[in-house]
Image (cartoon, rainbow, N blue to C red; front, side, top):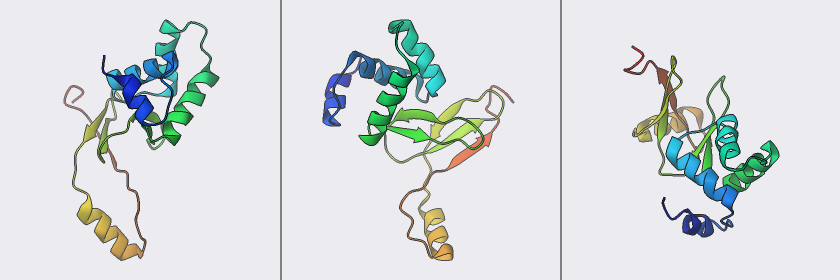
Length: 133
């Protein structure tokens, strides 16, 4: 197991057993929904409530320790915060993967054509993964 205690502390978060397990679940799965996280947490903490999961997720979001991936027409999933990246999702099996793309020209063109000062971007691509083709 990685040194999650130190990483949590670097984000001004206490390293509670629940937060350590949430971090481990996020690290292991890559991307996880609240419902799946709740199922994972129940195996270790049989009396944990969904409210506790939400409370910890919200604190971790506020501390920028994790980030929300908003998928159109689906429930959000969460991941550990990392360098800027995009996501690709399989329409058949639902697998979500990180994908490194250079979006500089897309953002520049969008800013120029819209007269917006773009501060954030998120790109989610969908298709069929190799296993489902």
